[in-house]
Amino acid sequence: MINIVDNQENVNPEDFYASLKEKLEATHDFPQDYLFKFIITNEESKQTEIYRVFDNVKYTLSTKDSKNGKYTSLTMNAFVLDADQVISIYKEVGKISGVMML
Image (cartoon, rainbow, N blue to C red; front, top):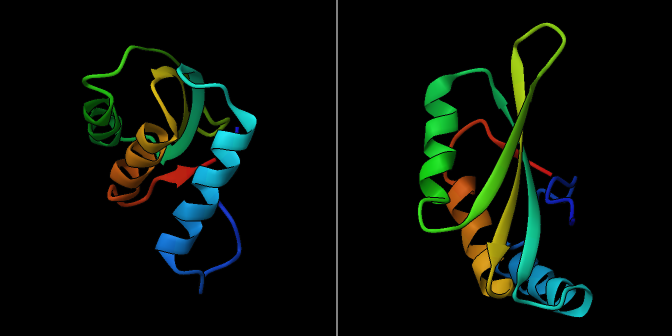
């Protein structure tokens, strides 16, 4: 799993995703299962938005609420065909406000 959260706020998104694609292709043998992790505020609507991104993807899901119940972590083990599909999923989830991608 590659950590998307970083402290490089001034990085060009296209450069970031190009670098991510290189890393994915170097470390994964696609097609295969890929582990996505997201942290969201504990709102059902946020979960639904993320689930919609995975509509056409076979995945298993586990969730865990934070100790105080304010946040939920979603772990999705999804079968992906290639690095481009992984990046596409990250880009779509990235459009959802308040989602932290790990």
